[in-house]
Amino acid sequence: MKNSQQKAGSIVMWVIVALVIAAGVWYGVSKKGEVSAPVSVAGDALGVPATSTVPVTTTSTNETTIVFPNNSVLKQFDLSMSKDGFSPASIEVKKGTIVNLNITALDNTYDFMFASPKIGFDIMIKKGDTQTIGFDTSDKDAGTYTFTCDQQCGGGKPTGMLTIDQ
Image 1 (tube, rainbow, N blue to C red):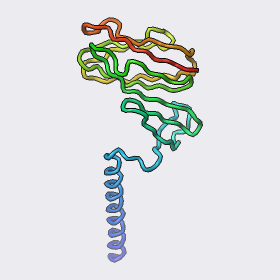
Image 2 (image 1 turned 180 degrees about the vertical axis):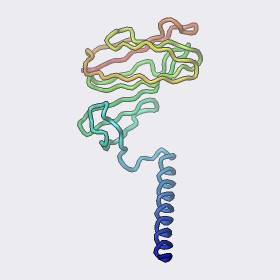
Image 3 (image 1 turned 90 degrees about the vertical axis):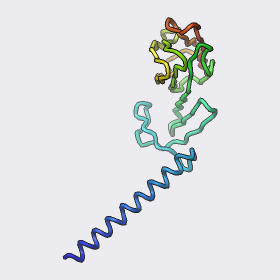
Image 4 (image 1 turned 60 degrees about the vertical axis):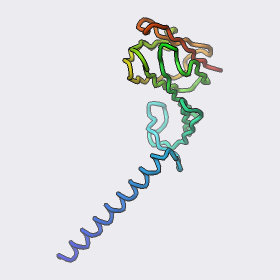
C-alpha cells in the first residue's frame, strides 16, 4: 500500500513539474511578442463562439486587427490625446467592423466624444489614464465622424476623424 502511494505521489510530482515547465516556455515565448500559433479569443459578445481560434495580425504600432472564422473583423486602436491633438488623428475602417478605441489622456484630463449621436460616446479620461470604448459599425452610415474634446480640453481642442468606408 505504501509503495503504491509513493508511486502515485511521484507521478503527481512529475505532472506538476511538466506543467510548470510548459507554463515557463509559454510565458517566455509570449513575452518576446512571438505568436507561433493562433490565439484563442473569448468572442461571444462579437457573435462568435467563445472558443474560436483566430489569427492576430498587427498592421501598425497603434492598430491590431483580429479576423474571426466567420469573417467578423475587430480593429483595436491605441489613441492618445494631448493639447497637441490626437495620435493618430484619423482612423479608417470598413462598414461592419467592430471598433475598440483605447484612449489615453497624456498631459491633462480630457472629455472624449463623438460629435455624431449615431456613435454616441462622451467620457471623461483623467491624465495618465486609458479608457476603452467599443462599437459595431454595422449599423452606422458610411462616412466621416468627428471625435473631439468638447469641454475639458486643457488649452486646446483636439479633433480627429473616424472614416467608415462602404
